[in-house]
Amino acid sequence: MECKGLFQHWLEIEKRNKTQMEAINELNSACGTSYTQSWPSKMKGRNYTLERIPTQVRKYMMVRVLPCLLKDFNHKDYEKLVNNLI
Picture 1 (cartoon, rainbow, N blue to C red):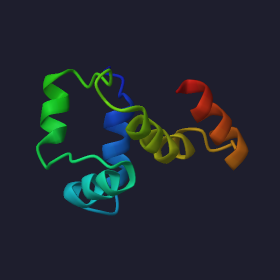
Picture 2 (cartoon, rainbow, N blue to C red; picture 1 turned 180 degrees about the horizontal axis):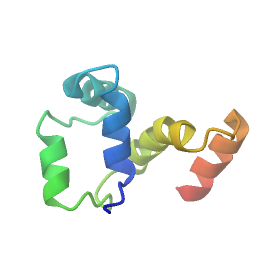
Picture 3 (tube, helix red, strand yellow; picture 1 turned 90 degrees about the vertical axis):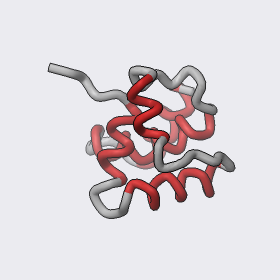
């Protein structure tokens, strides 16, 4: 069984209620990046490694993914966890 990483979880969660391009545009706006529609396929080609992804982008993704995975945490717990992971 393949384990999903941060990028895959983020994209799956975002695509529940918006298009892939809308999700990427929101991320770009929030993080000052310029990712394009083809970014997910480029990430797949790199085995979804996040080593070249800016810290702000990883933080943005974590803030959206962690509440879906760790439902018993409160806002302060998420904040603390994200800051410790970065």
